[in-house]
Amino acid sequence: MAQKITRGVEELLIDANARVATIPIDEALTLVDSDDHVLIDIRESGELRRKGKIPGAVACSRGMLEFWIDSDNPDQKAVFDQDKTYVFYCATAKRSALAARTAQEMGLAPVAHIEGGFGAWVQAGGPVEQLS
Image 1 (tube, rainbow, N blue to C red):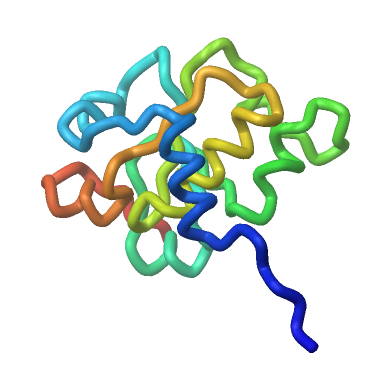
Image 2: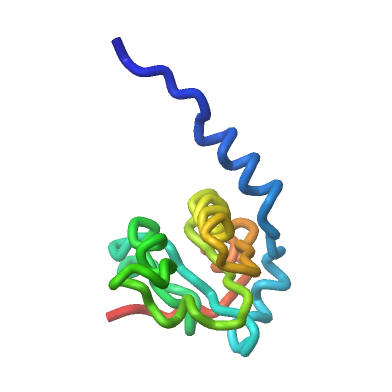
């Protein structure tokens, strides 16, 4: 018999969005050159190659996030050891909400995510850096 899931993805998203700041796309567009923010693209490498990313954003796949944040882990990345606001994004703002919530639970602060994700970014005319 299959195990019954007690908290589905929709419930997790409701919780994450209630606890993590969401940055409207018009405000997000101003963060590209911000010295006070680090943009974190959590999409997978194939998505990045096909669609590009926000210029200056750090690519960190969702699967590596916890390892890169944890200062006690040998895979920790210095980008997550700064006194800045971490702004996560994915394709549509679902994975980024969950990622930002996880980062927040790990003690990374402040964190936020971009409303509508990369899709909203592109639709709003935001700059895109193509990867080779």
